[in-house]
Length: 165
Image (cartoon, rainbow, N blue to C red):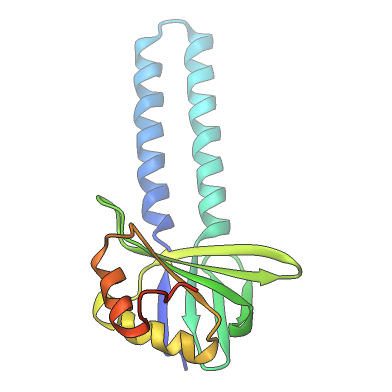
């Protein structure tokens, strides 16, 4: 049973990107009078939309933090990845303006350094989540971006000023 869970925001972003590309493609199609350029505009628009849909299908996932390991379930393809807590090297809290708050975990898999970005665990329970992750792997490096974010202060209250090391 998962203790914490989250997902990517990629499907919504891909939908908006497809809508923007379709609008630009329609604008170019209606502005050009030459039939060859109109066909070219439609073709390029459809190819770009197809690439965005393919990318979103392969990258959209749900992440479940279970007792024994982290489970990454890809939403549109039948792929499940298991990550041991001992393989996680960094947990990053990202709160950029005008975008949803995200978390990023960096981990090692088969001698490669990989990372996954997903929507942040709820703000109220994020400190509890960090404590839980640290209980599974005390070597996890904690990072807050931007460094003047309030979450940085909250983590310093618990782990001191050198909590990142």
